[in-house]
Image (tube, rainbow, N blue to C red; front, side):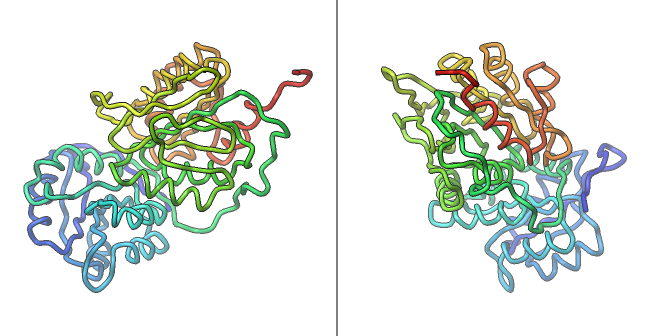
Length: 356
């Protein structure tokens, strides 16, 4: 089941707010209800009330807290995605202690996770982000969560010998599921990987830790000076940009502060531009699911520098925003379904026949 729609003044995005705090429900209702293209159809204090309201009001998007009475948000999310899949934006307190729960929310099917914090009681910190996330979720392709055939790390073809290639990946909305699929489908001798995924601070460490448990390759949240080596994937930390640098004969990453680029930090464009500069034809890039345009120009710079570049196709994207812009710019050498991205990355990295 996929729920999408053409939204506008005559067809506002219908939102159900699920949170056990009456204050938060009131703040979110006021913030979202002030938008001309959004209609709050109801609020629910717990998943049991939410279940009945979903059946009654048929919302396009649900905002969901994770810590609630009677049933926790993760359990409710799993039941919802199995029976009646809807775009869900999780809005919860993301701290180092509970960020693994947020990772589970994404794996269970949440389109995006936002940090509630103290801002939830005033609306100031979430203004814009909450509205943006709801709009992105409304256009998301959400499917019933069932087990699907996977390439699998054990079945993925080995490269036989190491190349000097590196792989750069960028994603946003829907990217956590896409990255899990890609990284768990790659063999242990895959060339070094650098990744930007739009997500909050604290979340990236838990996400990398989870991926490291699932994948054959090592996955870690990047730190200043980390080397890019075969069998390792480096994930940009939340709220910091990551760039490729060289140190003698080694390729390393540098973690830098700086202004947001296209509202994002980390930004895919920042990483991809550095990959174009320092790796050029020795890089392979893939831009995957996400709202907006981040990474499109960077992927174009990579292609212009001689990199092989890939854009995820519309049918397999949760949100066909970033790849769409890249395709329109002529940034992609090929357009590939998510299922085929791991194989195409490996093919682009494989040593050429007759090469020394």
